[in-house]
Length: 151
Image (cartoon, rainbow, N blue to C red; front, side, top):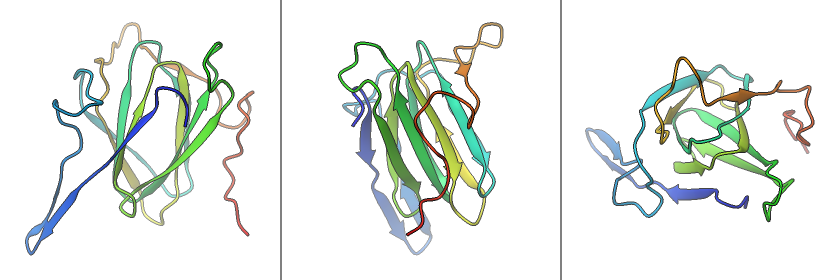
C-alpha cells in the first residue's frame, strides 16, 4: 500500500427500518481534523481524475454504487514512489479511504447506476487559491490505464 494511505472497514448496522453506517469519528486512529464535508458523483463509466493536494488529506466513502478509486505515489523520496493502488469501494465494500497530500487520485464509476462519494477533507476549499492540482485523466505520465480489465 502507498505510504501514508489508510483504510477503515466500515460497520453497517441494518434493521427493518434501513441501515446506519458510521464513516469517520473524531476518536478514530486515522482522524486528523475536520475541514468540510461534501459529496460528488460520477455516472457509469466516467473517470474523474487525476488530481492531488499539497496540504489536504481526503477521506473518501462511496455511499451509493461502486467506484474504482486509484492512487499514484509520485512523491520523490517516498518509500512507495511509483506505486499504484486500486480500491473497489461502495455498497459491496464499505470502506473509508484516507488519501495523504501529494498522492494523485481519481475514480471511475464501475456500477450500472450513478455512484456517490462523500469526502471529509481536512481543509476547507479555498475558492481564491484552491489546494488542487490536476492532470488529464488519460494523457499524462501516470502508469495507469482506466480501461476495464476483462479476462
